[in-house]
Length: 252
Ligand SMILES: Nc1ncnc2c1ncn2[C@@H]1O[C@H](COP(=O)(O)OP(=O)(O)O)[C@@H](O)[C@H]1O
Ligand SMILES: [Mg+2]
Image 1 (spheres, rainbow, N blue to C red):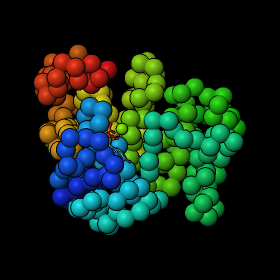
Image 2 (image 1 turned 135 degrees about the horizontal axis):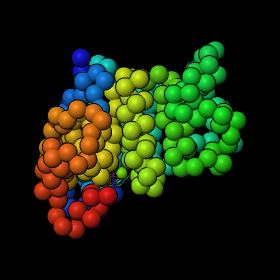
Image 3 (image 1 turned 120 degrees about the vertical axis):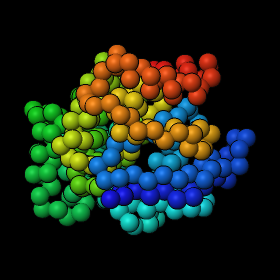
């Protein structure tokens, strides 16, 4: 079943300062249920714009997005979003941050949901901590748990691991795959790292200057070994699409 359908999608901003007419220029793709998609591209190619459109935060100039068969016109509890700067409420504890969405929906099980998710993202013992007392990786776990709390069908993630140090980032990639396997969500994950995309995704969609440059299924079983020749070949295939200068950014 198709969870996401993006059809003839165009986006331009009033004050955009780029040398193309559209920030997103006729984007088309579908995402199946439970699929893990990575949107890969260099800075400025339109990744966050695409995510904000999928989340219903902004409106397309032309074209449509459907999630679970419904036209996306505004943000909804069916679509969870995780950002790089996790945007947690500093005055709420871990539990309160995670229970926030369900409470807003007047869900009587809000605290139970929070406890279950705390367990899933491995934050047992930190229930009453405030975000400022947690490491970056732990804050990001709270962000993921919070996005899952309203049980969305679709989880959108905009470079969620981008601010973490290399070691934490690698650990979180593995954690995220575990969470995905347990929850069976459809995930659209944005990254500018080629190896991160090849490590995580069922399918990598390469975004180039607002267009889909490649849409490639990664046919390697998980957990993936970055030293596997197939892994190296996929990484090289994507890297071939970038200039020397751009490679500095996408090789991280
Ligand atoms: N609100 C906005 N107004 C004008 N231009 C914007 C706005 N948001 C993004 N842009 C421009 O659109 C292009 C794509 O931005 P973005 O989607 O953030 O790319 P990415 O996330 O891939 O770095 C950039 O040139 C950026 O400057
Ligand atoms: Mg961005």
